[in-house]
Image (cartoon, rainbow, N blue to C red; front, top):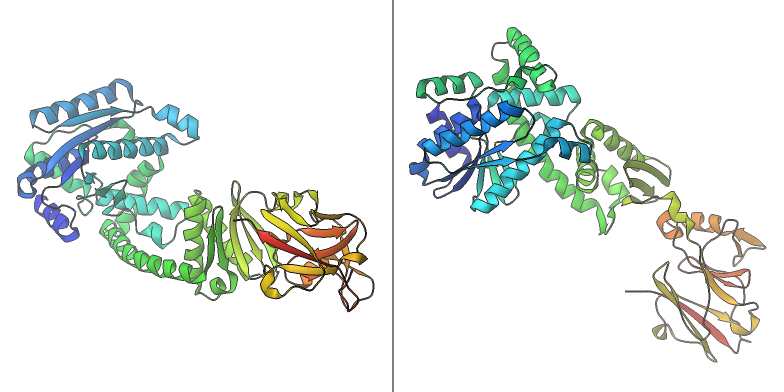
Length: 466
């Protein structure tokens, strides 16, 4: 077995000469065998080894005995050892987690901290081939994609260190035989026989049943994981490239994609691009991941110009004509802007709700484009009546339109002009009294037009604040 582990280390470049290695040691056969093998390879690789035992405070005297066993064995063999006590029950209660998930989070946090303190670049764990089989089957039971079939990676980043699993290609029976042959003692956790846990039911019931159909079933699952991992890595790279191609912009609260660029991608890449974004932004619900991805994909492909899907907590995805917006907050509640400010004429008026400034200038001559900011409108100042104000949109707003008799609903104007919903919500409305004069960037009303008889020109400009 030791030679197979050495070959795995060489093949996957798990260790380099001079590495500092923190080893997670529970006291079971897997971690004790790993510690023994790395001790045997210590001189060959000039390794600096540190054992870390995480005491979960869940099994009383039995857990205390495990910690003492690991510490005593390490002391006898000249391996520095740290016993770290963590309060799994308190962590689980605080974060509403199951005990196994809470224990895993605290265990990995303790290993990362130990690696940082020891200046170790590697964290070694004793996961083996049977763990791989159980993991893949558990993910199948819960629902998974190609990434889930990839199972446990043989190495990955863990904080500032790299987590390695040198025993991942070794079966449990081989590890137990190794311990017997080399006199490596270990302790058994009685909870590993309890069918209260899914992993144990898979190990004790499902794997033996499937192995009866195919004695090489565990090897077949490990082969599947190996193939899936390579294909998943390739597709993930393609998905990241596709995401960059469809990305309009990143914002402080989310991501905006080109809707058609996403829809034109092959189905597999559509799903992966959406998954990348959801994984990064918000969603930590593996059992519902596919449902969220499919809902977002259908939303993007819909013929409707606008729609919305909530994915998790305050996170949502909405379509807005040609874009797909991933954001945070309450989309509907953002319609509730309510402000009204008198305009300084002449002068500047700040609209803090919108982060913009309205500048008014009164002149006795027409101005050239170069004298104005990009967003402007001009009126015959003498033909305006009522106080000039800037306010938020209101239900039922109507305005006159060039070339049309009567008035038209502002809502219909915005729809006709295909103004995105996110822009409509932040649309300033400039009025003279109750009469709407201008929807900046969209439409000027037919009120107070400039003619050859105009002698006083009112120029309004909108500038977004930096």
